[in-house]
Image 1 (cartoon, rainbow, N blue to C red):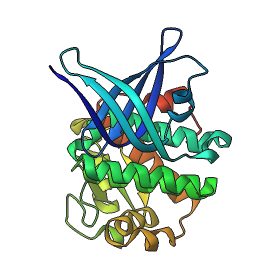
Image 2: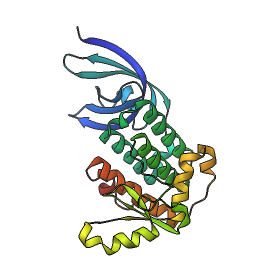
Image 3: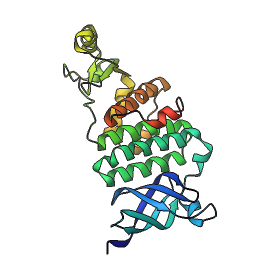
Image 4: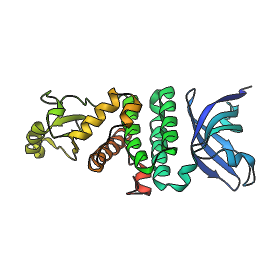
Length: 260
């Protein structure tokens, strides 16, 4: 009683050692979201070679609900990501995505999050490192949308003018709003009295790119070129905003500072 076998499509998000021979594996699926399961067996176990980080496929589990334990029975791997082993950037970016997914429990929309994480790691695997970097920007912005926390990106949160009418905008975390360059000056002058800290600067090209991610097809967005400077502004904003959302520092960024 309370025991059953299930199968579902899943992707491996993380693996931790348990004692000398076993591993604790975190999967993500469209059907059940975050799943924790135990992989039994030593280094020569066939399952160890299959259950590798970011591999995806059909997962078979034996679930003991009374003990709240899941045992990995089999993993029919459909996709591996071989380029990750030779690219520190790609592996770090995938680990960041995994950490965010786990901390936010798949944003409560498991199907959309499952589709997004798979598209992200599959896309990085066939991309150059430069393409993977801009792909990371797209993933983070789209995931914030799934979370339902994307700020208004068309109009200034104060004067309601179009942000595209200015050469840059700023995002204030405490307001979760973008302000145009004109309103930024007003808030800077009143910074001491309002307690505003650490706004994120984004240039016009960055604002345009975020708008494009929301309105154009993935194929169309991939054709848009963006400068390293604009991409860096977006990276700092998105990672900082996600730390605000999760309420804690992202360990991936602390362990490997400067990689992303």
